[in-house]
Image (cartoon, rainbow, N blue to C red; front, side):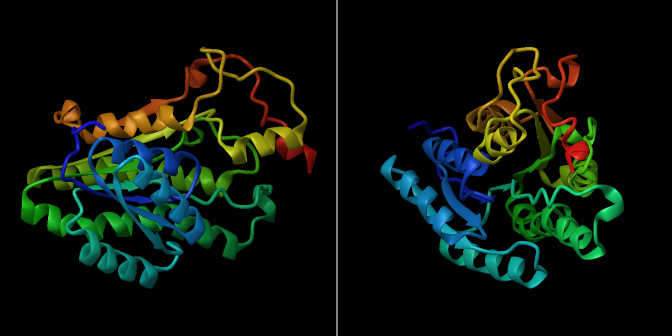
Amino acid sequence: MSSVLEGQVCLVTGGGGGIGAAICLLLAQSGARIGVVDRNLQGASETVAAIRELGGEGLALECDISDHGNRIDLYQRAKVELGAIDLLVNNAADHGSREKFLDVSHLEWERIVATNLGATWHFSQLVAPSMVQRGGGSIINLGAIQAQLPVATYASYVATKGGIISLTKALAVELSPYGIRVNSISPGAIATPSTQSALDGLGTTEKAPTLLGRMGTANDVAQGVLFLASPAASFITGENLVIDGGRSLSRDPDPFASFGDRR
């Protein structure tokens, strides 16, 4: 166990699996108490169990973050049971049903916006006042390289991730006078169970389209979160850290590039 985040309270959305679970575990190993938020209570509880096995402290919090009222109730409970939030990680995201833009319903668009961009905005607004009172804090938002490298059938998700990166910069400008740092991370080509399932469905045999020749891991992203949350990043705000193994510069074909043509 490290002590770099000793005594801090961290709220992580989407912590019930994949990248979110890896973030929760690494932050807990670094001394923080973790509020694990997920719409799947079982997933959140499993992450908390893993945290406790490591000797850390965690609280499972069930919440459908697409709903405004649910977010308020969740924050109130976290504040009572964990204390004031020192670090917020807006990780949860809904990729949506991968449909061509012309086929996406208005309800689907609104749901993706509410879950991804709306929740990032609202949770940041909920935690910021107590950070202002205490003279500082950190907010880390999860963007995606698709905001700069969009692929077909992903328009709603891409739009929200671009919005999150822009929101990060806007909040950094507004909240910096209070000692609050706001940064984002844009992962790309990360080997999560959902990604692997999608690749298996495509039947692809192509190598990972990165300069480093491999897919990233959830822990690669978690390490970026830990860095931005730590004192080592105390002079960094308003930045978007890309963790993609050089995918943004790679000329290799994207295994998902033809996804939209397979419909």
